[in-house]
Length: 287
Image 1 (spheres, rainbow, N blue to C red):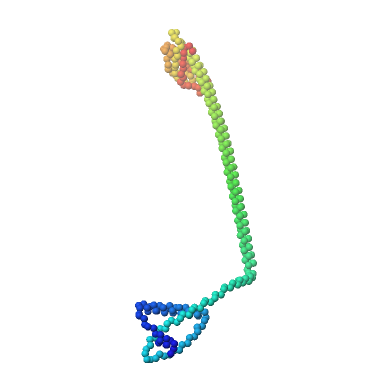
Image 2 (cartoon, rainbow, N blue to C red):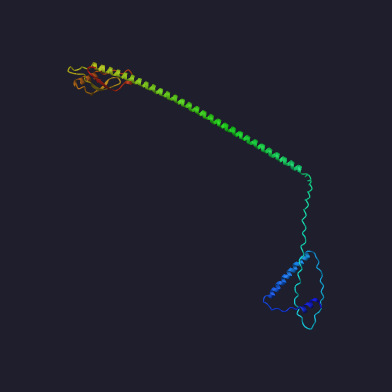
């Protein structure tokens, strides 16, 4: 018989009293043992160690009475092997310097550079032309503005000259008109004065002729004045003599009226334009 069978027969433990929850504890212990065993197996395989073979001899039990086979107690847990020494990290070798890449010349590089240069020259030429065109336009605009200012200044000067000449002409015309007015006034005054003198002389001659025909009454006292309105023809012939204002002496008034009628025709003026159809004549005995 094997050693296992002998241990089962002679060392059979007494059955302990069943305790509630013992089965679950047993299952949990078995699960923990299995997990620990799996860890050990994994660690053994990780260390590349081949397990030692175990040989066991099995004998059939006697048939006389049934033997209750109790589960074998867990095998003793072997102590874990010490971890393998971790090798010290070796310094990485310096990176190899890349070999210089020799670029092959592009056959189109010269053509591209030439086109780029031509494009740059074209842009530069266009920029120069644009600046020249803008400068020309600015110069033309400046000249146009100067010409416009010059024309405006010249027009203003012409207007000022024209206004000054117009003012001078107006001043001359006004002075001439004033002079003419003064001359006409002077002439009118002179003519009026001459006409007045001529009329006065004409009236004096008429009065003198009438006075020569007046017979003054002897009883007349003082120097009374009698005024008559005399209507005559251009030839001097008297049409009517009307007393306008009495002298206060009827005899003297009648004497003057008879003298006026007797003096017809009356003296005519020296100039025909001085003739007046109706005359107002004043008479006093002592004048």
